[in-house]
Length: 493
Image 1 (cartoon, helix red, strand yellow):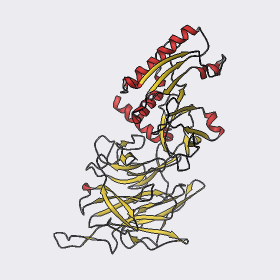
Image 2 (cartoon, helix red, strand yellow):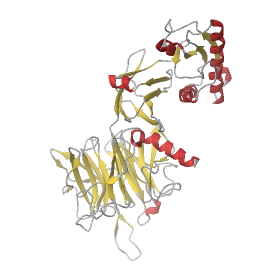
Image 3 (cartoon, rainbow, N blue to C red):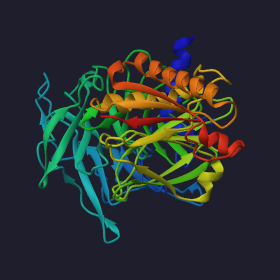
């Protein structure tokens, strides 16, 4: 039972605004057909889709489809790209200007002949550009990507300099691997197999960039899933891959699921689960529109914009918090959609060389406009206040809802191992100075003990009780009390 709860929480973390709960439904005909409709790929605006299908043919062709006023039109074959052979697993770039795909057309590299001496043509990777209102003639990808093996399911990373694809020896799809190549000049080179735990010898394939984060989705038959191929998410940051996470039963079925894409409130995947028009179909899920949030991340000292990883936790009544990690752009801007039922949004930024940022925003504050996230460079004697560390009334026991902000301080201290803090407790102006001084010291010590229990060395933490001697607002009342009851972290080294 515990394992099922953990999986559900992890899935909600990755899918953030998607946990509102609508099931996937197949796109209606004529998008889906009685034949395989496979490998959907979308532009960033969500209004253009490409996929491959065998409808009306003996071999696979690539189709393009457009959405107008929320409805998908009739798919049309891209005659300029298709050949008399198999053309499959297309990927369209976010701007709709380039399509990459796999094909076994004439000109593809031949594998060694089989035991009967028959010619075997492998799938190679090709691309075409949309130029002057038409698609150009496809060309094989230049460089060293194409081999006598099958190369399928290409995609470009968000940096537009990295190519990902699946490769396996001719006739042995069980040996499939997800590969990565880099663009150097005008060729694809520096080809590497992605490391374990992405590749695990369990049919890994369909590596698709997450349009709303710094990770990727892919499919695998590894153990612990819900059916055949399941969809996983993996993050990529600072040159390191995280542990892949299964998206859970809200996305995966007992059958085979591939090519997951999330665009705003819409999610799409390819699956042979029952209820579709034929074999493999394209499935869609839309969730109710949420609360749009816009923020600017900048250096407080210089006002320069910063590209930083921002963690946003949306608190939701009677549901697990929805947590997303968003990378702000070079201009410091980020845009995010919170679930409609959000009661508060906790924003955390941990950036090496800067004090941790933690603040809770109400939906009303978010709707007012741009949220400014200012990161403060670390200096001796500089400090920051946290109002979201809560204690039982007149006691020093830390409430559970405070753990997330304290864990953010732990994360900060582990990333900045030379920083030492003085933890200073402050109270409101109710009660006597003597009582509040003792209470604030006990509360500061409780914070210190929590941080030590999470692996922070004792020598890095001092405590002080300030009681009611240094109020932020020198008066009583709900708003003043909330501002004055706080924990201060002061850099002492």
